Image 1: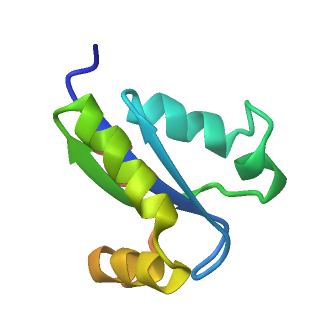
Image 2: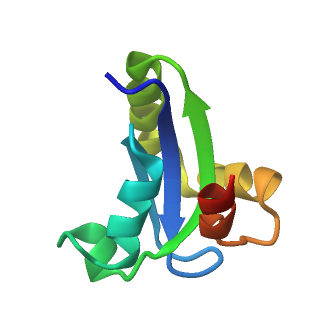
Length: 98
């Protein structure tokens, strides 16, 4: 079982299409999105930028948080991202170096 889980949000541009996911291997999962290794929603909409992430110690908590965020209204999701990342920077370099 992973030591740390992450809930994350990917996009194609600021205030663009959003994808919320959960993973126990953040770097590998985001890399898969970025290189379009797996088909599906993120591939179809070219969602390559990681703009939000939340670490969680307990997998059950992370999974519940992902499900909860997916039910949020779009403007709430945008506000969540902009509170943590107002410039909508791609956090990929940060997670790779940290």
